[in-house]
Length: 373
Ligand SMILES: NC(=O)c1ccc[n+]([C@@H]2O[C@H](COP(=O)([O-])OP(=O)(O)OC[C@H]3O[C@@H](n4cnc5c(N)ncnc54)[C@H](O)[C@@H]3O)[C@@H](O)[C@H]2O)c1
Ligand SMILES: C[C@@H](O)[C@H](N)C(=O)O
Image 1 (cartoon, rainbow, N blue to C red):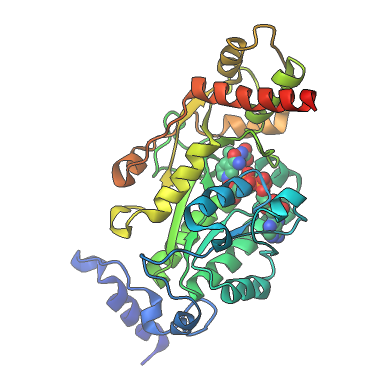
Image 2 (image 1 turned 90 degrees about the vertical axis):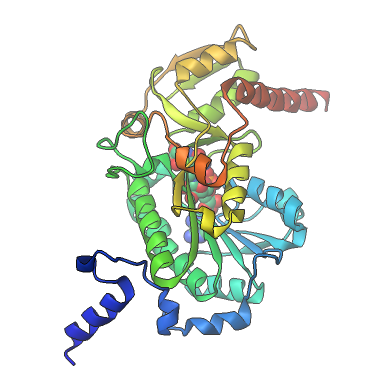
């Protein structure tokens, strides 16, 4: 039979015929006996079998950034210290190295990644390695390699070894032609940064692997995340972390975005809880594989007003960074996360007042401890 006809026939069997109006989701390609890197996928059952009742064995890539250490601590409380391996290409500080398993892992090295997954019988993978929006624009080829080629390695390893895979996306996966206030889950996505383009690619590839190979891919589009005990890695929303540090240290802050720039934001505790909740959600409750999640939305002006309630002498000045401002102006102002709330019960805890109190308390007590010492 001519190859083209044969492929059409196989595709027809997999997808149903659109013409007959009876489209069915394709069965995972696993059932056809291949997986993305041509390793028979059944081989994976020897190294990592995972039923919903087992405790997961977790690997976090890019774990030394703003979010990874917090995620490791959070998951270790739930699953045990030794069940969660933090990895990165950077050298961990002593307190992180001694807080639980840490391993070197470069996501651009496919064999290294596979070896770690096999040797540690990993069942859940949280893929946090990335170059964020502002640093990505400063080094497009590295961002392309880490965010796109690295993602391909992660997807292949996850599909071959039957992992449940979490990949965070971002408000940055939308662009100036998306509806911005609010931005729904499904709409035009034409971002103008390499970061955004790579995250749309990750969403689409993850969903494709889910439908094609049965990969248990789960993805949340995070807003800008605000954390007290870890520094942001070079994004557009970084000001909303730095402001607290500077407010406590010097009572002054120079903001690199205009006072009226509205962006969706979330406190890290909500972000980590959302991440675990979507990973634990029964597959049948997920009507989609990529969800917006949100908590609050504010401008530098709003944030300043809230900080002033605690530190009346606080002063903010503006020195706008044109690259970051252009990025922020193309991103959502408000995020519609109604599908996450409906499907798996997402609900945030922290609004702006609680966020500001929590952040200032953290830095305040940190400063008091430092002064006492
Ligand atoms: N922080 C936020 O506000 C935010 C918002 C939306 C989405 N996200 C996403 O969450 C994830 C984690 O974000 P973050 O803020 O912790 O990022 P980060 O920039 O702080 O950390 C990223 C980490 O990736 C590591 N990395 C770089 N190249 C690597 C490679 N080749 N192999 C392995 N690791 C490598 C870096 O060393 C770094 O520790 C990212 O995917 C990011 O896109 C973050
Ligand atoms: C929003 C998020 O993806 C990241 N904090 C950035 O600004 O690039």
